[in-house]
Image 1 (spheres, rainbow, N blue to C red):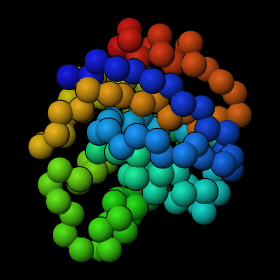
Image 2 (image 1 turned 60 degrees about the vertical axis):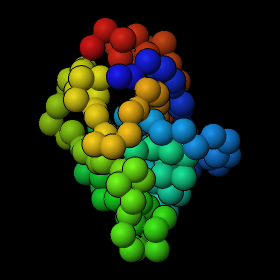
Image 3 (image 1 turned 120 degrees about the vertical axis):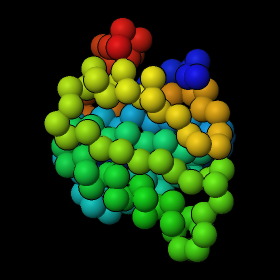
Image 4 (image 1 turned 90 degrees about the horizontal axis):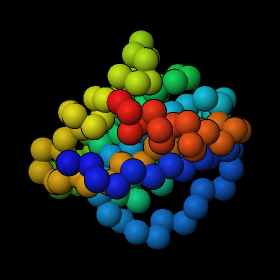
Length: 140
């Protein structure tokens, strides 16, 4: 059960924060800015290295995030077998309202072998919507 909710705004193309802790979490990637494929690959690698074990993508070109994070997870293990407790679940939600994605993440975002108590809203946008998105997540 998710008990800790955080917000992180990433301006498209920006330098990513360092990986400071590697605790398991669920990420809802909210894509509202245009993203270059190279930067998307960097963000996907960063998510996997940071402990993301469930990634849900919503917004612009969200299906490509599903593939990108899957690739980063495979790359993390040299394209070999991924341990069950390191396997990243991925989904994309091109046709769902964001409210439904938030509800799904809170109620169905369950990893098969690791308890996820932390949720990170990764907002890819030039504009910070921390208060609005955190409130919408809590209300979902």
